[in-house]
Image (cartoon, rainbow, N blue to C red; front, side, top):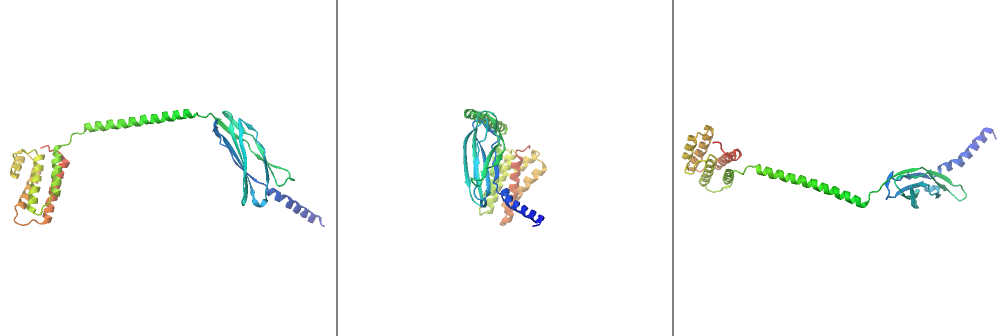
Length: 289
């Protein structure tokens, strides 16, 4: 057999023998412990070995790790099977004191059969910072103090708001009694109903007169529209205001004593004009006249 052929055959045998072994190894997955714990807390290290189910079973052997400032409280194993077999090793530790705690590197070994040698897998070192625990009573005390402080602050803000509201209420001027007169007249003009247009016009006339007498402080002995206009003119009412009042009185009087029925659209327009006038007095307030 030629030398080259022998060489190729030997390489094929070696590859066939060793390549499967290189792939038939469980994969290591580590869930490391918390980086910082209190002295009254425990901490866990979870190690998982996984391999395809077709590779068959493995025998797993784990050594107890060497520890510093930790004690091993519990250790157990569990396995899940499926398309992938998962062997989980769970270590639970408890710290001894504050400071640095160390789980030194240790080995987990596996093999296929009892006749095969153990193959080690190295688990790297894990470091944990251990801090003092806060006593439960101290925690409750701090929590109670914080809640009490927040309650005091909230009560202070609440009291401050109430004091400001009371001060603002004291500074608000008392309501003007004339505004009630204007508001009542506005409501009466808007809501009064009667099948007789003349009755409705008389009612509107009286409400308008009440507003004008109140707004301009016309003496009670002056009652007719002519007397009111004479009083306002004698007191020097601005021409624009006087003309507006005169026009309203004149329109209402003409409509009251008209021998013809007043069309509804004319009544509606008159009502809107009166409401606009009264609302103007509500907005303006008291007269400087």
